Length: 405
Image (cartoon, rainbow, N blue to C red; front, side, top):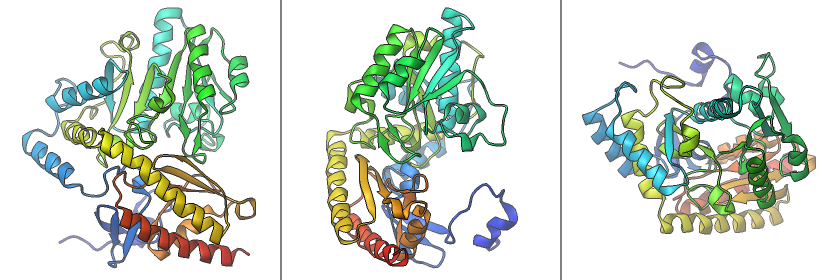
């Protein structure tokens, strides 16, 4: 018999690096979630852009059950059919010629940054090791990825951090021109900065980065952990811009909720990861790869990707009406179903308060920093769920405005 657990159990047994909300969800179906008390919520959070096909999608369940009957794990002493099929799909659908599998976005980025330095070392020597990233970027929580990330708070208390990394202002072409040199091995960019507030890159910035990397024999890395796998209305966000990276990282939605990450790259770059130079015990796990393969089959269709753009318009119209009625947002921005609503200055620092009120009204949302409400729902969220969720969010916004007059 299983022991009873509740929110207080967290304080008793878990490391306190999270502060989860009071409820414990126990069941999900589509874009609806139920907690221990049976209360229902509309899910606009999507597991932070992970549950791209909602909760418990029947085809993902069927794939997982079938693979679970066949093969769970081997390690990379052997390869396996699901990993090979998934790698082939990713190469066929993107610029990539080679794939490396990991378990998360942070691990995919760790691999990308190591590969960039190894490639430069192999071809230019140890002096070409510098990495340029952007202020307010986020690339994961390993020591290397928080160092490349442009938010010092995530490094605090963990120094000394890896060196040879500099940060420039996002979307500032001149700053990038001044920073890059023949010592630069890579420029790392999120096509849309996620954790800092859902801020899209300009086409000029990405095109300038591509040109400068070519001129200085540096690699261009796109972190598409959050923007990838249909989130912006294209399979990957780089396809919206017409700018192709040398390395791309993907995770979150790739497994539809099953943990998996991947680094995609060109063949010439991949050669620097020779036998034994990097690895992952669980990377390329058959269960994860089988599910991810089905995720790609379901998402990468013109019908679904076009529907993402249409649902963006639906959300935008709702948010515009909401903000006319209760004007608390300075701006709503983003692409596809990655939407950020920035609070007006008078409400800065209170995004989590609105998140909590939204939960109380029966809709799950996210924050991106202290001032932005983030929406990353399922890519196939039904229109009725959008209607219901926005009605609940409107009630929360009214309460929020009333309490913060």
